[in-house]
Length: 95
Image (cartoon, rainbow, N blue to C red; front, side, top):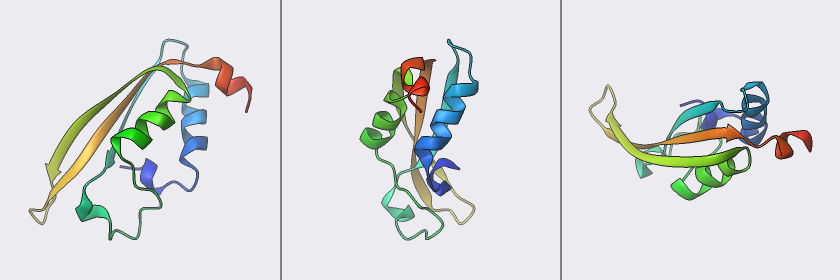
């Protein structure tokens, strides 16, 4: 629950990919439920499609896993995990 707060999430993923080993992996969780739309701390809102598109820029294989959790106020929050495996060095070299 950090990527949605970043001004330039693509730059963050590029940096992660840059420091990973070629066969490295990343696991990111972002909220995606409607209950988060009013959260003014979030600069970005991700869907399964948009998170996969972002991960596909930097990783050879990607996976999106649906998730949900209950916050301290008892509200159920939808979220997704994004998994990227195997760094696409061709994309990193272009940056």
